[in-house]
Amino acid sequence: MLNYESQEFKSLEELKETTPSIFTKKGSNNTSEKYTHIPTDTVIKDLELLGWGVVDAQEVKARKQVGYQKHLVVLRNNDVVINGKDGDTVYPQILLTNSHDGKNSFSFQAGLFRMICENGLVIATKEFESYKIRHMGYDFETLQGVIKDMIANLDLTVESMNKMKATELSQNQTFELAKLMLETRIENTSNTFNDQSIKDVLIPQRKEDKGFGLWEVFNRVQENIIEGNFEYNTIGGKSRQARVIKNFKQDMKVNSKMFEQALEFAA
Image (cartoon, rainbow, N blue to C red; front, side):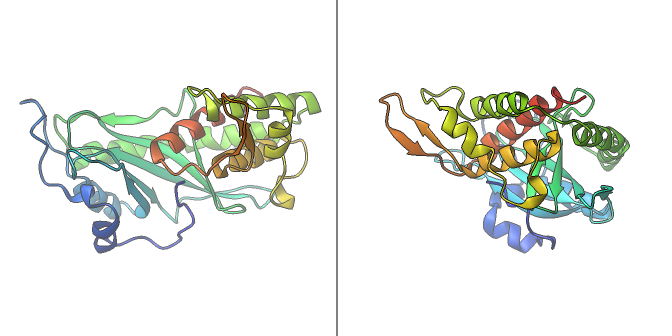
């Protein structure tokens, strides 16, 4: 699970302890001649100049190519905030991913941090696609352009939120959305779930998420699915308690798809 709760920015010294692959100074031996190394720490420093600081960072566990593996950095600018009319304050975030093995582009994806539940969402809309910088060159001007485009698209984020907040779901629609989101969590596995699992993920963790509004339903189901607040059945028919998603790649994938699914229910 991604740790979105921190309000203070992490220092480079802290990041060296938790995510050392950020500071790798060259690509692995597997990279091609066309590959140009993009130091993640350099990009972090450049983003700090633009007002964005690190609130979380993780890296994939690796047995081979240690120091070159894929890693994630979550950044926030405390001056960039979306204040909802209902007091539902949301901070846009940048989810930066990179690796030094030549297998991944340097990419930026938009995220949201919801203050009420200290919960992180990943935006997935056709208008708000991830931005990628190939490992064939990097400069500060390119970064400025990417951030400028992302900020410009915040209006689309507000529009998406408002559509969800303006949409009331029927009981059947609520059940259907929760079912779709659960299917996203267990896809590509042999596990199954039943109606009780759907009822479990629909349980609100706070009063702000009660009711049949699409925004409220989505947020409580999303939180319960990421946190593992439901049971599923194995291929052998045994009931198991789900676990919190700790792998950031799975977290981003599941979060992004669930956001997209919820938007399809918006009025």
